[in-house]
Length: 470
Image (cartoon, rainbow, N blue to C red):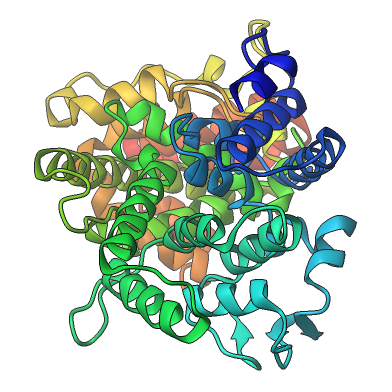
């Protein structure tokens, strides 16, 4: 085997392109598992992987995410990394042709829903996937219950059945199943890892997989460690990097944000609102898993605590961003209706003086700075770890709002913002509930940017300033 690796140049430099890296990773994993597969077939599979994961709607689940998951010493988890996110049905709005061909015999479409067809008893790959995922013929596939992961595993089997032995496909399948995220223990207290152990044990007996008890335990341990790496972003040591990846996810689930400069204020708010709702409903204890000492207790406690801290901070960060978006949305409604964010805020990346809203904001009062959370203030002032395609890296307008209100003040006003979003509070009533100096300063800045609405915006600012002097 070593001679074969040398002949195809395993030790030679690898071109930096994602296709080249995928080919090398796939070829090495298959060779390490003793598979005999032509380089042309390896190339075909690597191209399919990159085509699926480079779809225009994707901004986080990309080939770079695959490379971050690869464990060069573990060919099973390398295969799982390459195949685990192939299908992202609701984001990709369907399948690329190669994946559609691979899954078409196993599923049927009913409107926007996917269902499993009656199973072919000779289809071993499908049988293994259903057993590992706990599915039965005729089941509906749920986008939030493992549909994408199941279909990704099935595509792996379709491409590698007859190439790899089942004893090598099962661990990779288990790794993919374990990446179904944010699952709680069942009513009997059994964790997803324990349930996976049970299904693997039952599948071994029913399908003749000859897995020993220790073999099942090792498979589940590997799957848990792989799944933890898949969500490792939640355990980032720096919250700025966690928020970076959170912001990468927003355009995947919000198509309007993919058009730089033209997404509306309301669509931006809706995207933030959805992410805020997700994080507020997320139980931090469901992010990471532990099974029979994997990972070790000290490491497990560290990643759980970091995950809890990052989620708590992100909730606060999204809260102030959401309140700021509410101010802009209400001013837009008051002056003519929803409009592109760029009309009020300016173009992302604009550097000329006077080209951004923050250039026109007055200085906030200094006396509230002792009521600010230092971490949140730094995030707003200095920003996430990197810029995104649709939003500034830092948040000067949100910082202006936060420095006016302080932590307690912005929390008090979030309820009013949600009432605005639901339609139970009129835009002017919402704006009138805000400090006059703050909202007048923002309205005047927006009037400078959106001269087509300057009359309405200046008029509202003047009205609020009169209430201060009254």
